[in-house]
Length: 159
Image 1 (tube, rainbow, N blue to C red):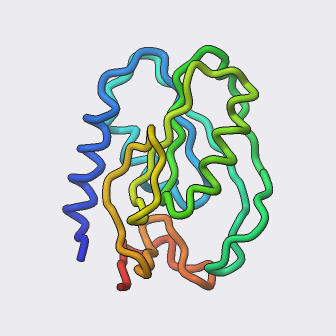
Image 2: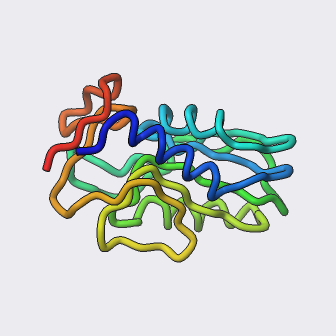
């Protein structure tokens, strides 16, 4: 089982992988990534970092449905390196949708970042911390359970 200490170490490892940045943009995918985003951004060494938030609704309980953008970014990302920060890269559907959407704003590059990645799901540029086994379910630390609750709890992994 992953502990809070392992989460902290994973966040530090992700920030090291991102490395020093100049004029980068960090975009948090709401709602699930807000705690991870907050902890990650504190560990990023960046000159003139900008942050923003985006929200897409895609889940009804634990089933992923049609994607709908409910909050767009408000800053200019043209010609910028953008780090798109999400809680989990599961099927990849949400992040691929958001990368395509953000590409319309002509960034230099959009790099997806996730705290968790489901085993067997891949993206060539994905930076991630912890790989989850097939069939496992996580909640807490910003992620909700199947009923939409418990984002405020410590991280919990059910296998």
